[in-house]
Structures are given as structure tokens and as C-alpha cells.
Length: 413
Image 1 (cartoon, helix red, strand yellow):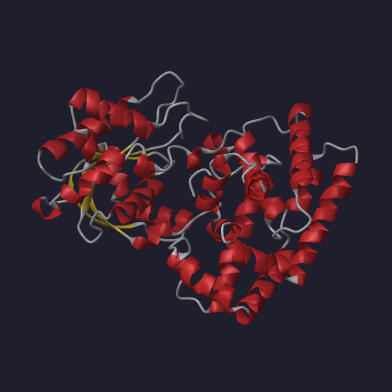
Image 2 (cartoon, one colour):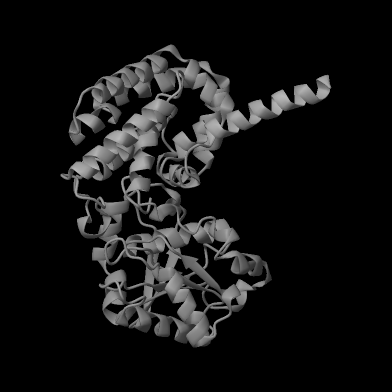
């Protein structure tokens, strides 16, 4: 009887703990991992999380923020700026956090191993890997803080993002409805905030909630790809002799429709036909189709999904020779996201690949303007652009720098 009672107590404790840890929608974890690898890794490592929670200075920062949030919520106001501001990381607080993270790094072997092994080796911050420890910590924390601030400003306060026509907040931020909704979400998040948490928990939670309530969870959709849409091809890759083909893959770029009726645009369908021609000519063993829910605003259909359907139903391409990349919103991330899948699926990176699209778009991909845009928007080149073998196909070699996360574009980081 005592054994059964002890088991029941342990079981109830486990269930309670599980419920507290996973009370948020599952999509939060995926969004967090893809946008904020550092913070997500901390949250999922109980030893590291405990080290950081116990730190006096970080605890003080957390307590001050919690008090500021409480003060705002007690006011009878629906002003979005005042509701969101306590969650924003100021330049001063971000600097203080960096200094303390580096101090903990110096003092704690466990945290030092966490940074040097887990974080550096993840690839999420590959552009910073050659930096000394202090600057590396500063860069990765600042990037995460800036990413959170960007979401809070864009999907909380309604600040226009770079590509406002497709990436903006979903609601009228001047409406009483939205202001009231944000206040209620903030109250709910505050009510779930524990006495002791990581210093970033409230801000990260609100940022993820804003993406969720705005239906801007595009970055998490269709994951995990390797177990869902891409499963058959991932299983088939080990059977492919890539040396038997001139190219490792054919990447077909999307061309989003401009209305809510069409699943594929006229040029999108042309791109598919052009890519199939290269495939049937034996250029590569795999077709990659790339395009997300980008056009029009909050598009219902995912372009890569629709392109895959077209390949199978209209051209009879075997499903286990098709990879979808359903998140890209621009040509820059068509190549970047595809490179990430090549790395994940062990598709040759040193071998050339083909990117296929209509004549005008193909000319752009092979131009210096496209390379300049990659550097400006991504901070690096996701691929080496080589020869344009015809009017609609360009050779490229993917680069590992594509692993770098970009939470400043949270719909496709």
C-alpha cells in the first residue's frame, strides 16, 4: 500500500511538473528553437538553467522586470507602448546581461562547456565562431535580445517590418480589441511567471505569444520536415549515387500568387516545368521546391507544398525524389534554407547544384545585385553562384554559413 501511495505521489508530482513546463502550445518550442537557439538550449538544459536562475545579478534583473510588468498591468490602460515596454531589453540592460554571462562563463565550468560545446557547435551562430569568448557571448546574446525586441515592436506595437506587405502584424493595432487582447495575454503570462525564472522568460514568452496570436507561426509549420513531408526522400538519400549525376539537386524557385484563389501562379507553374525538364534530362537525382506562405499577405497555401503536389500529379515525379522547403519568403532564403536541408540530410555540399527559375528571375539570381542583397539582408552569402548554363538554370555551391540564425526575420529565421 505504501509503495502504491509513494508511486502515486511521484506520478502526480511528475504530471504537475510536466504541465507547468509544457503549458504553452507546442509551436512555441519550435519557434523558440528556430529563432532563439541560445535561449531555447538554456530552457531545455536544467543544469544550465539552474546556474543562471541562481545568479544574484540576473535574478535582480528578472525581479525588476517582473515588478515593472506588474506596475503597468495594475494601471487601467490599454496603451500598447506602455504594455510592451517592460518586456523590451534596453541597450543598458543588454550590456549588463552580457557582462554577467561572461562572468558566469569564467566562473562555471559547466556553463563554459555549454557555450563552447553546445552553442558553438550548433551552427546557429556560425558567423561568430571565430570570435573570442567574451565577444562571442556578447554577439549571441545581443542577437537574441534584438530578435525578441523586433517581435515585440512589430507584432506587439505594430511597427512596420522591412517587408511590410507580407510580414506585418495581423490586426489593427489601434483597435480596442487588439489592445485589450495584448493586455489580457500579458496578464496571463504574468500570472504564469514563477518566482524564480531565467531573466529572459517573460520577454521570450510574450514574443512567442505575439507570433502565435497573430497567426505568424510560419517558421514552425510542417516541422519536423524529415519525419513528415520529406521523410520518404530522406530515407531514399542513402540509396542515391550522387556521383552518377552532373549536379546533386535541382532547386526550383517559387513565384507566389498575388491573390487568395490560386494555389500556384502562372510563373510558378512555368518554373516547375523548367525544373522537371532538367530532372528528366538526368541533371540531378533530387528536386527541391522552395517557397512558403509569403504571397499574398498571410497566404493560405504553402507554395512548396503545392509545387510538390504538381510534380507528383502532373509530372509523375516519385515522391521520394522530392524535397520541400516550405519556409522561404525571398530568393535569398530560398538558397539559404535549402543549404540547411542539404547539411541536415547529408546531401553533398561540395558538389554543384542547379537553381531553376524563369528567365528574368534566373538572370537576377546570377547577378551582383542578388549577391549584394544577400550580404545586406543575411549578412553573408548562402551559396557560391557559378555559371548560368542556360537562360533558366544557374549552378551554385551551397555554403555552411547558411546555418546562421536570423531572429530579426522571425517568420523565416
